[in-house]
Image (cartoon, rainbow, N blue to C red; front, top):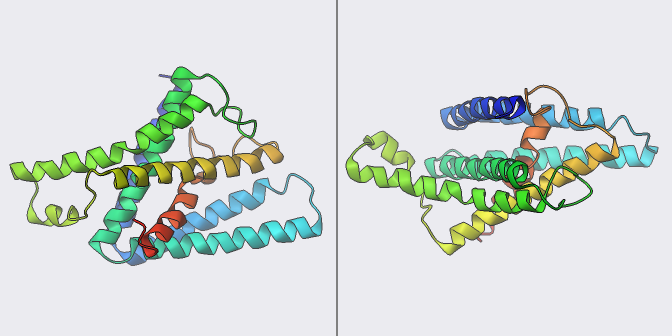
Length: 236
């Protein structure tokens, strides 16, 4: 295991624990946290996009669209999480799908390698993309396995209450995982395009092994609004 991979794993575990706490404590804590996260990502995006010279119109358009999407992300995150157990569950499951998709892409891409996916991000491979899709389904099986523990009376009533969300094994839910993974990968490539345009490797250096916060959650900030759209349209 390389030093970089160790850093990524430790950072990922730390972020996952913090994220679970923030999502679960209460709605006010969540809103403050999501506003802070969105602001940091917006700052990182603006900061590394200052490197390449742009016209006044390009700069205005970039700032306008970025700020607009910032509010879309904040709005959809708050409404997706809502103030209910099912909303919290739905948000956590979405987060896990994104995380496993990212891990699958990294591990498979490093282990197998092969043909490059696109010139936008030279480190991404077709095998890595396939790995992202495969790993994105893991949270579904993990959730089902945890639910099965209820039969052995391992969970108390409070914890059972948190697992009343209906995320069963079905082709519809598998397709949901794959769609979220697709959006995550597209979001990753979108941010990679701007990094390549500005000739920077990372959006920042706030996270060991990851770079900036935007480097870590580039897929998530696109997946959350997408999942919220699926929810309000009752497609899933």
